[in-house]
Length: 69
Image (cartoon, rainbow, N blue to C red; front, side):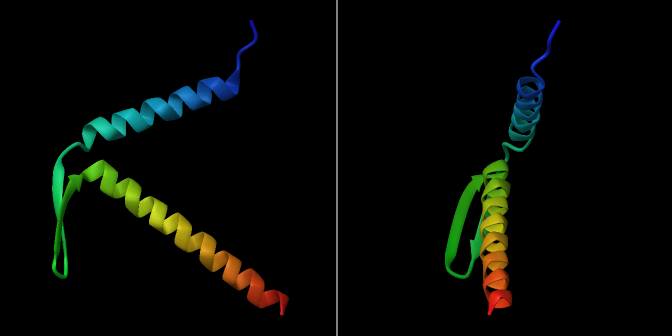
């Protein structure tokens, strides 16, 4: 029997993401300067992950551009 390993890996990652989502459904309040924001903990963690990825991508591009000069 031939297994599709990419499909199995994708389903495993999806299952882990769903477990993470359901375990972190608690609403947290984030206070920054004058703003109060209430959101799910898992969405907040995902938001921070995306910010970190974008910041790393931008810094990597900046350093590559700087080394070319």
